[in-house]
Image (cartoon, rainbow, N blue to C red; front, top):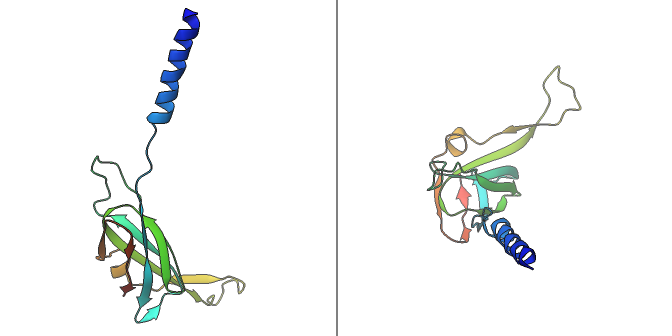
Amino acid sequence: MRKIALMVVFCAAALSMVVGCGPREEKRFSVSGTVKFEGKPIENGSISFVPEGGRSADGKLLSPDGGAIENGSYACRVRPGKMIVQVTGAKRVKPQKGDDPTLILYEDFIPAEFNTESTLTIEISGDTQKNFDL
């Protein structure tokens, strides 16, 4: 009987460690809106929300949140905090002379000041509707 009681206590302790000690999902908020470049909706692209400083309060490296821009609109889930906003836009270009003519090529037409060197920022503290006119 004592072995059974000891086994029950051990199993309960093990189960509580598995269930209660795993990493928690970080809170994310719904962020959506439109994105235009030079007054025109970006048909195909992406939007990223990069945590300013790149690390959480406890020093953990944070990955960006974001999603696709389709027909000028985006919708994604973003963690709270101050974010740097990076936008890309893809337009189809023709293959150059000597390229395989069946290639489908795209190039990013958004200037670096709105993506790799972006100074656009936003503070996320709840569900947010934000339009960007670049």
